[in-house]
Length: 88
Image 1 (cartoon, rainbow, N blue to C red):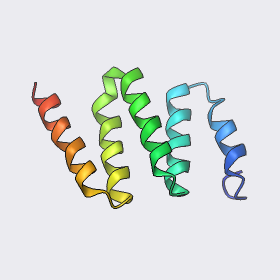
Image 2 (image 1 turned 180 degrees about the vertical axis):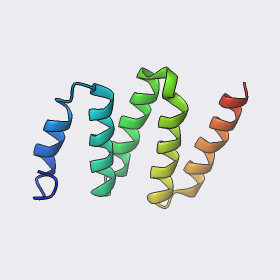
Image 3 (image 1 turned 30 degrees about the vertical axis):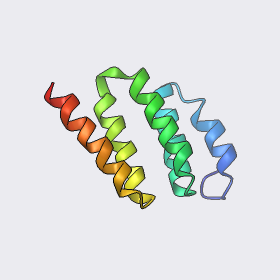
């Protein structure tokens, strides 16, 4: 679906993944590809809350999305938060 520019159908498929976290991550990637950065950030933040073991990795993805969206101040804020969270 993704290759045929049927993004909504691709996202529906991702949400049916047995590994729900991976499916949601793929949905977020699709939003980044479409430059729908806020939607991707929302998903990554939700994943960080749900998947505590990998929360830092999800938040790093939030920062990368902000960088891609040319919002460096927001990216830096997330990175700073990660530094204090990981250090603690």
